[in-house]
Length: 103
Image 1 (cartoon, rainbow, N blue to C red):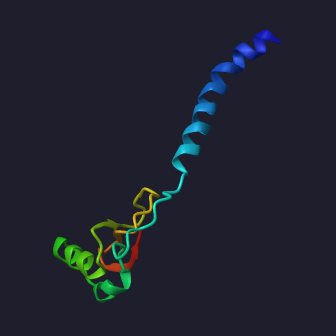
Image 2: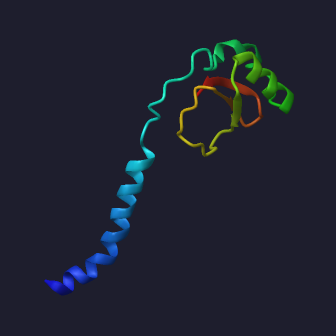
Image 3: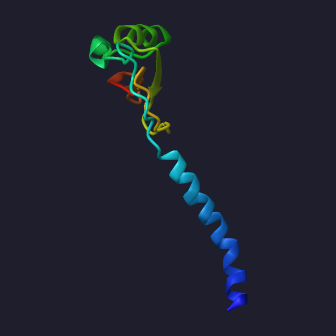
């Protein structure tokens, strides 16, 4: 039985570490958003259908009342952290804004 444990130990250690790390990364932020600090994506709806540029991104961020923004293209990898002050600007392959969402 000892040789089996010896051969299984190198496999169990990375699996245990992965389980611990995934438990840490799935935690939700328990802090509520500050009053009046969250963005409102509906305030920037007039930018849907426009080509994204630095100027349009800044204008949409300001119109939504957000403190930051990020542009998400198709197949982009994005973090799953929720930031109620951030505007997510979704664009199509032609860089046209198709959706605005906070978070």
